[in-house]
Image: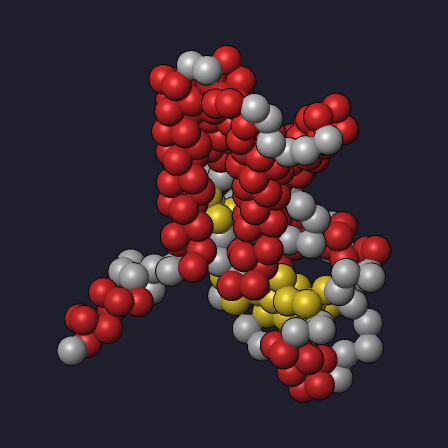
Length: 234
């Protein structure tokens, strides 16, 4: 069963409809996509089904409902779908998730901290071993955390594939914070071992982020990756 929810960013009720269907899709085993009517797939659905109102619910290519369904109504529509196995992967919708918002706020905090050095010192560079500490607040702090936030929100939306959350995302963000703070503190104090340790933690956080994105950019097809699937066909 394939369920498509046709939405748009300017549609206020679409957020409510998506929330209901996200919850249902985490309980029942069916393919679920949030389709923006501004994208090519969304335009094709609007044209083929002659849609004039959103949110619109399409099941296996057929228009089933218009507007916002309640949870019982949504469960009734997908009543034939079996219960979904427990997983930490989830689809991303119109609204940014909690971990993404945490990453954005962290990014802005590091930007303010880097700007404080610029305001006091008149430059992003200090004297001696500490010269690059403010730079790392801007690059490894502000820029990297913004990449984390936008990457986990936008890439799953573009691909339509779920991204893993749960404890992995908090390990990623926690190690990233520890890495930035240890690196900057190491440069400011002249403790090279602390700076190196912080850099190592930052790299581990980046690796965890890549592991989360791998299924998004290279999803499994029939239990195997596309590359494995092509090899099997050959």
